[in-house]
Length: 388
Image 1 (cartoon, helix red, strand yellow):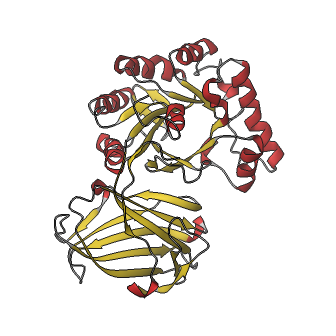
Image 2 (cartoon, rainbow, N blue to C red; image 1 turned 120 degrees about the vertical axis):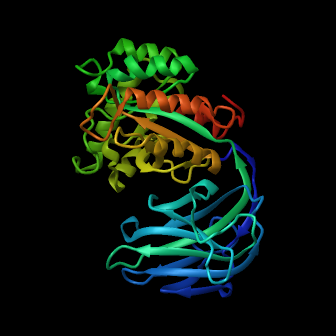
Image 3 (tube, rainbow, N blue to C red; image 1 turned 60 degrees about the horizontal axis):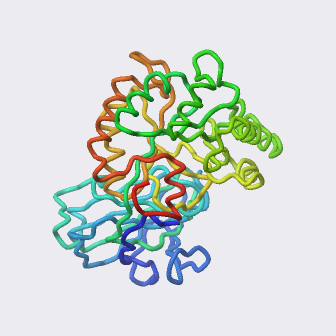
């Protein structure tokens, strides 16, 4: 699923030769079981509670490399503290860039390496040849994570996308967000809780109908918004919670592009029984609360990413999510809940002025990032590369 891809790029590092790497802090081996391209991946096993570092001598001119990404497979999320990629302009790493990842999911992750998100140490330069490539796994206390690095690619291009999503169904989405977005021609994506609609503080059925008629997505945020990981004990209970919302969306006539099969996990909670329930019901996607750019290629359809906006965050922080998505050629799902005038008590609230500012910022960049809905994005993965 990579139909937003315009240019495939070329392999910068295939992780096919163990002897080219110097290893410290753990062990390394070539692995043929977890492979994204070629015949092998580089399996790194960290020391207990420490790290594993693999360093390779290179000679790379990345001055025109454009977008870079790589694949990594993680066996156990609870074992990994961070993953890092380091590019050094010199053998001693006096001048280098570091990209640190703190959010990922179990299994394969396609991780972007856009230039705007690296940390510089010393005086590195993208216009100077790089002499060292280093990948590093940092462990949580008393464990030894196992991670597989594969297929680092440069000079690819995928058209960036921005999705504006809203969880729960708060009335402020209709009262505040809708008119602001309509002025720019933006459409939103709603993850609705069945039992909240037509109750105090939330949208009415008529409000949702109007948004749906305007081209907004209606998707599944469960029946009662229970944490389906921690509050439900069986797969059957999870299936009942998901299917009740699914059936309600269909009954309301809001089933455009099967939005009822696209789920946002309440409080981000999911585990194996939830994933099993999703598969059993034939759900199409599941959205987590993992905050990062989502590649325009699904690595795990039940573990999609977003970027949440809270009133406590500086405007520049949230704007950087859009800037990074543009640099990384991926999708940013800008995720909102309740919009308030001022103040705030929970991290899911955002001020009207902040929301307006974010929409203004996004509107100024529509030449380089397409603002579409979640379902339009999903359809575009296998259909048109063009603006929808």
